[in-house]
Amino acid sequence: MNEMMMTSLLIKLADLGVTGIQIYYEGSGDSGCIDQVLYTTDKLPESLEDAFDKIRSLNTWDEESEYLRNLDSGLSSDIESFAEEKILDSIEDWWNNDGGYGTMCILVPSGKYDVMNNVRITEVETYQHIGNLIDQTLD
Image (tube, rainbow, N blue to C red; front, side, top):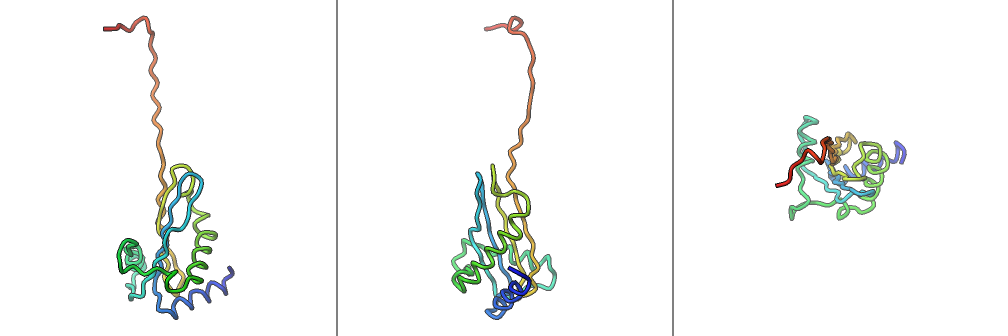
């Protein structure tokens, strides 16, 4: 997707009244995927940080959640593909081993985004114990 196509996509979303998008993704093993794409039509705060916080607060378990695929499945598919291929695939590895999860928030129509990526890491602590079996006593 080139710059002109992305601009067109953002304008189409804005024409539908969309002001922000939240993309939730999760993965582990050796695969990952985008689970949900929510949107809001609410007026967002002027501050970028506050606007992203408001988008991030969208809840997939809320009965009133608005899923972009229900508004326009083609636009939802396009934004998912772009987000995964151009942004999520190039950040920290959230899909292999213990995996990870996160949210990508997008402001519409500016296209500014913020990714909160959480990577699960298993830490290994190594201890070494040296001794002699003869010196150990059994009770």
